Length: 219
Length: 219
Image (cartoon, rainbow over all chains, first blue to last red; front, side, top):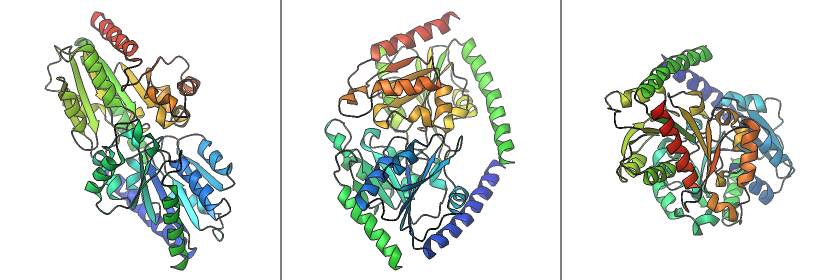
């Protein structure tokens, strides 16, 4: 019975997500859903993306966390808009939360919607938020085995960001090991090794984001 | 309706956990339930605990992960016993899983049962496993804000381990910041800053474990 309740809930979620996806297509907004463990550096990547593209470049951020406005405060401090969703005991965002957050929003000036999911490498993977691309992020200090332990999350991703590569000199884990394990699960996954601290790899990441936004505007 | 289903499920869990706790009391086994984000170093702490106490010192480990036997292979490689639970899409261990894993186990020679929960800083907090002490672990690369974002997890913990303190020189986060935030949520939480890489802090941690096991044997 628990399973049938869950299936009904995710089916309803998928219907809301499809509606969101249609709205974002009409409004020509490219949408990323970022999934990662707590502390992988999701907010840092969004900060670097805002700084790289410019805060007035049409970026809207939705921040998901059980508690606090700490992350949306970091985003608004850079001059971009952020909507905070606090899930309390909830371990993932769902499409209804995104729909509610965007209901009163004019997306006319928005080109890029970045959703930072709750820090959790497992639960968010089952919930479509209407995104164009699901981004999975892992960081070097987490070790290389995460793609093998959380294969559903990596299998459903459209792009991988490997963060904190500046720590490769002081850690046993290598970027190559993470890539090898990720591609066991998802062979053609595009990957961007970056350091949000040193800036390494960020220009390639920003180029990719610009291309996705441009393709969506022309679609 | 979803909430009432969940409440009934956790109430049933709590009853099974109480039964487990009574068995562990009769058998004088001290039980730790380790909760942390993926990659915080839970398995590394268990490895160091086995090496510090000796593999023949009556340690039994239960390893929880969505997929793979990677962690239990690390434990058995050190000469200790490990039981693997793969939760697949499940984001936490529950008391029934622990009860089933231990059903056929003779605990006569076991002094210390260490349960490594699924890597997830949120969902496991709601599930009593019959443990004596719930250990929450965070690591320096995750940043200092985790106690504030996941307050239920830190509020319900009986001990805190802060791992990867050897990286304090190369990261902006400090042990003091994590401690301050953790004690905002849980003022008297005992804390052990350690590095499972350099070994710093581990002797104090091992002393604490020895004292807990001794107190349980004499209870």
